[in-house]
Length: 168
Image (cartoon, rainbow, N blue to C red; front, side, top):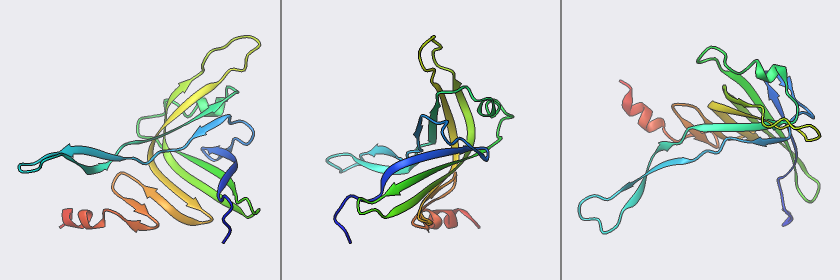
């Protein structure tokens, strides 16, 4: 195994509702899984501690220099309608080994900001998506999968015991 840097992002692209946006995306901010923590200090404790209460909601965003009608048509669809988004990335090790990263996302477009229009300047359209489902795979290996009821890390459920306690 090499000590050189590995899994460096060299390029990425977005698929929105099964349409390729190759060469159309300026910037992508993937979902950021984050634990929801609360501070707890019970009787007898000399200091509080943080306890996990689950996870924060997921969002992702992207920027486009062009005003894409196909993307705009995804905004404002009937409540609860999900769209499929795929983010693909080309990762490269410094010794030349290439890897594939794929993020599968289901959610709805919640913001379509056309930004400032100024002659002679590149317009930048910002879009935000509320994420209901998220999965990250590298070289086909599932690293993270999250929905409203479970999170799997490396394919192993982190909440199966709790879910089983709630079922009859």
